[in-house]
Length: 219
Image (cartoon, rainbow, N blue to C red):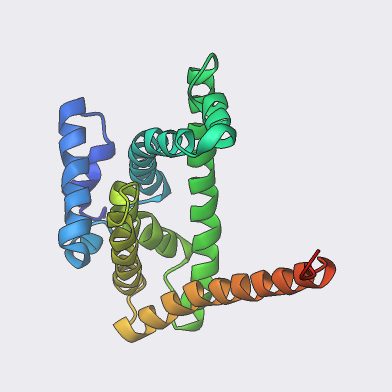
């Protein structure tokens, strides 16, 4: 006997383009405004459905981010202006933008799979037993605010924080573990890499300071 699939999953079927766009919009709005309920509605999604939604978000983010990035580079003097020209302003404008877009999309997908594996390690230690796919879904769907609004200065920081909250809710709903355990898994998955980066940065700073001669007063 087949399970009743959520109507939210029909966005991946053969349907008119305007209907698909509207249902994507409803999903995005649901994850931003009522995430816990929306996570419950997508429990039956598979890898293909999840990645299709995630790619739609990444494409939106890429299209909105690249113009701002190139504009910022072009306003930072001759060196960065020249770099911006090579990337997007000049004879290779279209080709450069395509390269940047492909790199951003590929990087987002790689980070999704690696980040989900890292988070799932902690989810498993905290009692999550519903598999790697559910953790990946928590990240892919939870990234909705960050990918939709992350390109906006300042607002992007708030969107990233809201996405962290969604990761916790997603792990809780999809892995069926208590909120405290989901919170512990997400905090450790985020804090440990940050601590490693801080230690590495301090190490390289100290090493650089030791090999770089200090200026002597009067010379």
